[in-house]
Length: 192
Image (cartoon, rainbow, N blue to C red; front, side, top):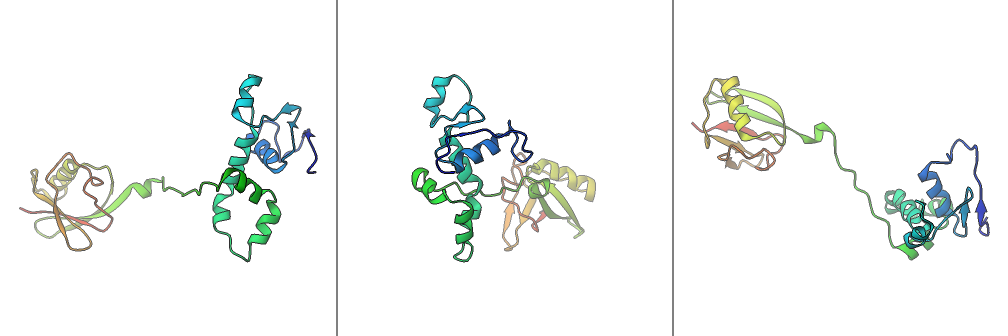
């Protein structure tokens, strides 16, 4: 398998002919492969320019191969490392050639990650819990106080009480909850 230079893969459901990930996987795993499905595999982007076609380069395929398994590699322990290297025999060689892969950090992109649970407290002590988007402007919270508590709030009359007991004035009505570092569990109350 190591000496294989030409490979054609047809009618295999797990490896579609137009699937870039599958092509990259094959290219990265077989270091001597020069042609895949009768298409030349250029070594670098510079080699790709001379062909005039948009092709998967060997270097790009190998980098993507490393990055797809980066988190698994960073999480290796002595107990499971032997199995990992058995399944990915070119791994050490690729890391030496291209450097360590980029560790991917999963970013929260759901609406829940952009929401804050805050307590709005009226002058009379009435408390209403609200879920607000982090980008909510202070002027909108002033309107909420007017509708929920029948309190007319002007600029500089709202305060934020954080979980450490510190009080911050919310005097800029154009700033957002994110701008004032509000966090879930904080309380917004009026100072009048």
